[in-house]
Image (cartoon, rainbow, N blue to C red; front, side, top):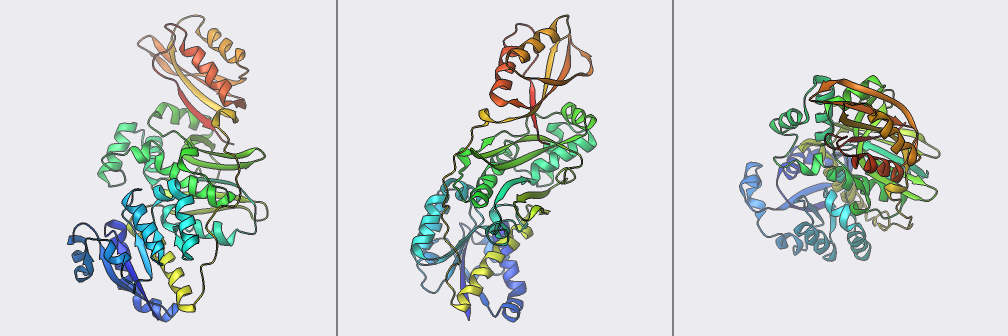
Length: 427
């Protein structure tokens, strides 16, 4: 049986999909009994299609794919949440199965696009939206379905992980690490989506929605990136037995879902601590399976295209067998989202303070006044221009209390030089 495919978006990942289909089409026929045929490709410029040898399939109007009655599967790889959303919704309405790698779309409009998939009776698959080539979406939806998933914690952005690795291992500044990441093609010219944490926030919203069967959107995710992390912080973490990673965190709690993205200190013996460079890893805890971890390259044409084509072939195999979509796409629970102010954890806080008598006593008083218990206090480095770095590590404390103490210290005239560095600690 021939399963006909229309591809919208012929950039890096789209080109990878074309290459896979060209290289492995005969293998798919032998192994799966599926003849996956690319019959139309769409982008704004034909040059990419021509470069991959499919210029004869080119159109610059995606409606040519939507309106083709012979096309069974539409692959959306243009990104964004405007035209891409139209492509997905129109394809489903036209009775076509859809595969997308669009994390922003899924994290923002999950309920709308999933409802459209259910109404159409067609599949909407998005395995490449999180983790690139790491097979995490499929296991969460199928292999681990017998479990109640209580935690999903991951390093899901290769750019920031590369930068933090370089800063920690080679004493690079944030600016130097970013410049190298851009030079190597790991970071965009405008790196905000990565370094400010938004890419990770979209991914953890998707993971949490699946793991907890409860809708989480990107707006629900507390998000802070790595722009304020310095080598001083990384050296302090190392001395205390920790490493710093930009973690995407989702916990099921008795009072709702705790979901957030921020720089985090984790013990050196944690499974995620040794995940370095551009690699990603996602750590899951289920009530019966226990701890599992998925590891691999999270980005790049090959990894993402592999995940996209895995979804395509999954659908194609079912089409060949005459099997309907495997599941409903809508979340059935409505768990509340816990605000970060209501959470309790340990904190690393570094202040650059005036080198004068009484400073530590004033700061200790502010912490005590807001019920924040201090585990340790230390000075980092020497005196510079009349100020020194002082690091506090707290016992478990309420986020709102920690913020109140910091705000009080900020208000002390002539005490601070610049904003404090705050890194949360996960044991």
